[in-house]
Amino acid sequence: MSCSEVIEVPTAMEIFKLLPKKNCGECKFPTCLAFAMQLANQKAKLEDCPYVSDQAKATLAASAAPPIRLVKIGTGSNAIEVGDETELYRHEKKFFHPTAYALIISDSSSDDEIKAKVEKAHSLRFERVGQLLKMDMIGIKNDSGNAERFAAVAEKVSKMTDLPMILVSDKPDAMKLAASKIAAKVPLLHGANLSNAEAMAAVAKETKCPLVVYEDTSLNQLADLVAKVKTAGVEDIVLDFGAKTLKDLIEKSTIIRKISVKKIFRGLGYPIFVYAGEGERAILRGLISTMKYGSIVAFDDIDPATALPLYVLRQNIYTDPQVPIQVKPDLYAINNPNEKSPLLFTTNFSLTYFTVVGDIEKSKIPVWLQVIDTEGLSVMTAFAAGKLTPEMVAKALEASGAKNKSKRGEIIIPGMVARMSSKLQELTGLKVIVGPKESSGLPKLLKSLE
Ligand code: SF4
Image (cartoon, rainbow, N blue to C red; front, side, top):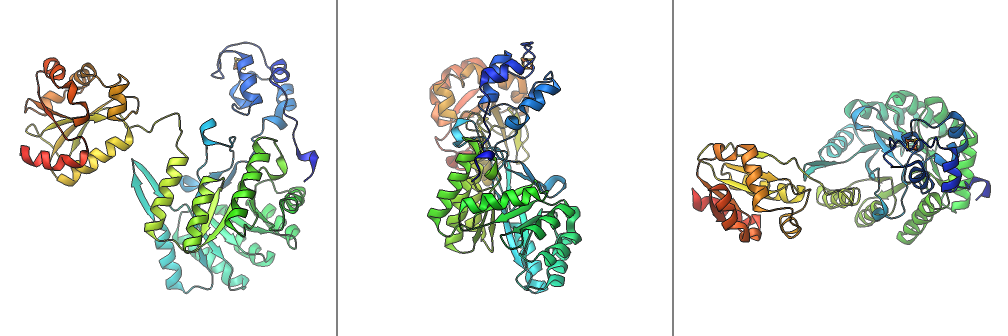
């Protein structure tokens, strides 16, 4: 790898000297020095200060660029962004752009098989804690070796889906024809290798599509190939180092992330593409790539029972560890309640809320559910931290008018906070019914109250 690609990151003091020194706080940091320190650590962006001079921008531009380039694929609301990561470990701040999953379709497939595969990609979606988890991309692979067939299948599939697409062929002529048909959808082109780099770079440049650079012998060779493609005028690059084993996958992904974000080595500062294949090995590659820096993982096939845990892993890794996922504190009507329906409360931690709602919905019994603002903490944690008190519950019930909606004169509280019963009764005038410790017990309790 060329040392000229390693950027010398300026120190906080060097950056500070170039800042306007207004200490106005508009960058969300109290002083210019604090902002300079965050910039030096790649934890802030230069454009967050509206007063930086053009001269300072030019001086700091190279070091201010993200260590891993942001690459956009597709258009519209389904377009995906990969890269632009700044951390080696999630807990240091957060990971920003979730791993995108792709389902690959062979252009040797029959029309029925192609249709079924597109439908499968669309159907691999689940809702969890209020978020939609789904397959993000569809790829077309040029197994037929025929340029016209490849282009025809790409065009056909592009009309069947709004998902961003990947075109997979090592033949520049086939790629050129297929990419020209669907260039408006900005597909990812996979890809350039040692023998076709110039021609593939020309296709990517002409169609303005991002390009995967593939090289499986060594990371040095991969960096050289990236440099070649960049010289040819392609900026939006994705790396595929063709991992042969799981060890290879973890090792090389980690090296790439580490030298990109810690050494600011631009030569490999790009998102990573991983071909997973199908079967058990594919799921292992998918799981590892989700945990260890994969930006796009492509499957030949994947079933719903495998996709769900993979999606959930991704969801957990790409949530902000410092901000619990929350729902809006409010009074929620579940199963069309009326004034005879029971009143319950829970907290605004998403996982708690959706578990409780799921159990109530299962019971099919109409219920008013008051959600208390506990800053996203679960019932027990919030209670222990003093963020779920009888006073707060009483205040929330008052603000939402819950007592006018449910006129039973009673409230069901989580079994975990039975200790607040008498105080809550005193504050609200409602009869307190202590519910189960787990929300799975709610259907039984609700039925007993009917
Ligand atoms: Fe300084 Fe700019 Fe931040 Fe204001 S916005 S405190 S001038 S760095």
